[in-house]
Length: 539
Image (cartoon, rainbow, N blue to C red; front, side, top):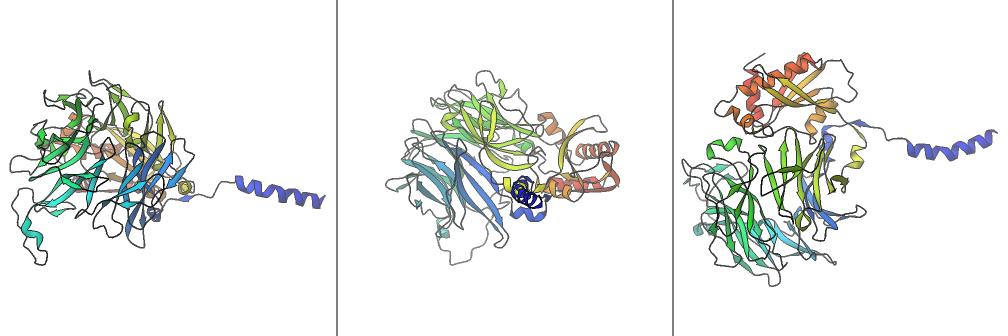
């Protein structure tokens, strides 16, 4: 009997062990090197594959490395397309489905160059050797040409790089984050013939051109032109169109005294262009993008489409039925919607407690789309969106998060001293006992034109893993609650936002969540400014 029982246990133990969940641990700062960032989903022309970028931080090299991956639409096949030590980004399918182009600085490319991968097999080949690299690409509809965005030095005397030159400031906007001092470099559009590798200049001048989009018939390219800001003008940009040939003269389709911005989208018949209009430059910190359309031949002025929505929209794609797909930012969420160009009616296509930050529909718009979606418990992954349902395609972080214990995320609504209703996101430590007061960190977002929402936040989760509740308040000035809410702090900083923040903290204390004697505060950018305002207002 003892021998038989031993045999039985031997047979059962492996099965029982395989079914035992892996031991979970709290998330920690070191996981920043384990979490993979998924971005830029691109649906293939036939709708059977999705290409995307996966990046991760390398602690030894102190930098990030990105590679291109792709997954079949049915989710059964996943392939890592590139695997070098140099980053590969911006995967773009040729319309005939034969090639996958991407940007990389591999082989001493001196900036990101265009590489071409033949889907039939073989190594990727470098197409360009543009000085200072390429920042954006787009395929012509016939798959024979590319439009590229590149940066050029307009001052020919700077060709001699052996001499140190003084920094000459001759413009109102003379420096910017990341770029440093702004000199005489401008971004312009180039045409590239894939077969002959011939490069032609498409746009020139003392303005910056970006966001090019080919017309459906390949005869024209639309783009956004931003002139140099001058005193009293502020931010300003307009939509242009140019014939897709060297020497063509660009034509302005809009002349709004403020930012008309991309991304751009052509209607299937090439008659209309969709873009986003904001507002006059003085509201630069509170701009809310509204979908607009304009005739591609310039025969009629632009028309606002989603003015009645009163929410920021982004990423337009014309569907085959003439409606436009957009992303809508709305009260902690971000979702996919369909907009009627005729009457501005908005139909929400998905419903969930998550944030869709990007999508690709292409020629399949209206049938299915590849979306980039994040939840409070998971970083962004690629999902198939079909018939109103989401199905996960990429699984870059599944194995890691199966081993982690995460805090719980919930909504918190409060009333400020002036009766304004304010919405926040609250994260509690995993396993926190109801009714137990917790030390709480008030984490304030920047902008102020931004929002804390249902996307994954490593910072919030790390604090929660160490026993803190984390409160993220969408104070007045945040977007996603309408233009009036967003602009309530115009020319009045450090007032209503502080009232909102303190009201939310008071609500967390009243609800028995926060310990009033153990409160922390901090934030980034404008959140840092509000940290100063708040600690100068109250003890």
